[in-house]
Length: 540
Image (tube, rainbow, N blue to C red; front, top):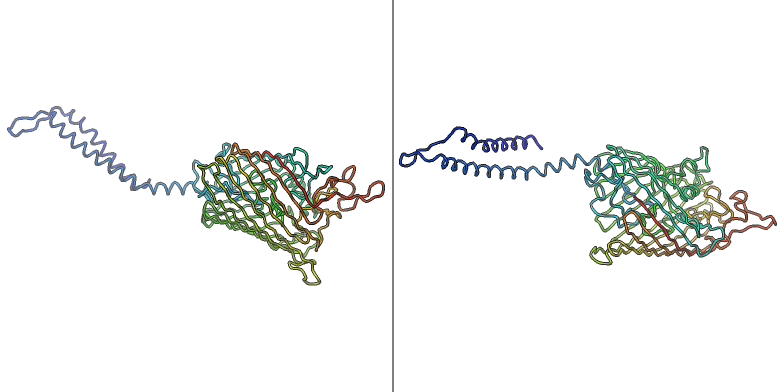
């Protein structure tokens, strides 16, 4: 309340108090008489009634004045309240893929005191890559806990005898119940200081580090240091424009649209342009929000999904996210300059990933209550150390490129209790520099394998389709059933014979395996794969 308004209210209160005590004063002075027209004295009660009527009119006028002043002061009071609460709200806004959370702006704000933050002008829980959780019952003033559980049972119709599934960043074993992820942590938000931690227990703690070749360069066991961390960063929020966040540590990548966390996505197994692109970055990001509808986010990182640098040059990147209204989301992720090819110190990587999501139907009162689609296209290449973006480069360099797309359509039913998604995509990746290496005889991205080479000129083309049905009785749980068909132009997927030598992994993963009989052992790789998955996904 301003000083001027305080004085005006104080004056009115004083006048009301004076009016209220006038009758008492009149009674204390005793009976009053007033000369009448004929010189007689009127009764004191009649005089008091006249005085009370005059006071009533005065009180009504004062009450009207108070109401007018309150109405005039309301905008000023609201503005001050919003300014006071904005720092706490902005320091805690987040959400995002790969990447995938989402707007990627921070933790859920304290609803009791927070002013709207970036991308909070509409409900974007319909997006793939965004959590649909709306309530945070465990949240406190300074900490918003987060717990995620992801358990799946997958039947691979190739029936590999070692139950090993390759070529996926989400599904790794067949004919078994597997804990894909147990994530425990949350978001700290004290004044303008930010921090986020989420653990990575379950299959992810083994499968994510094995796709990072940087763990084999240098000492200090980067694999062991980071394997149980999905996200771990700290930073600060600056009250500039609609907010600027500066964070350092391990954070989610946004390349590929889908979130690293399957609960957030429309499908369990994303197509190749998502599955084969980064799920995390290690470095620094700056999130700049010029308006509530726009985010510009530069990255300075060790490299393409790598705990350390593979060669001697870090990577640079930037995300531009624009949501003009509650029905459209457009994002462009770009990566450049990183030298991320093991054994090729002069090879530079370039990549662009661009997506649009549109909610084209929204009728909450109907049984079919919502429908939306997403479309993503990726393009990239590598140049130097014997390869070129378009081939036929210096010294007969081989073409090393990536081109792919994916499309998904999702419909929701019965007040979002059920949802059905159908989609798929394709890639062409000569040189195979982004193809996930099959885990043949324990092979990793660092070891490589002679059974599936990734040399310049090696061809790889693949496509897939999927259908997904979700039952969502609560905002905290999803029951999911999914069917996937995947295919490639070269043998790639686990066949009935599996990818594990008899008796288990034998010798170095980078070498061929010979049986006791002296015969060369060969993994059973096929050009196609059909899978059915049942999953329970929990987030609160």
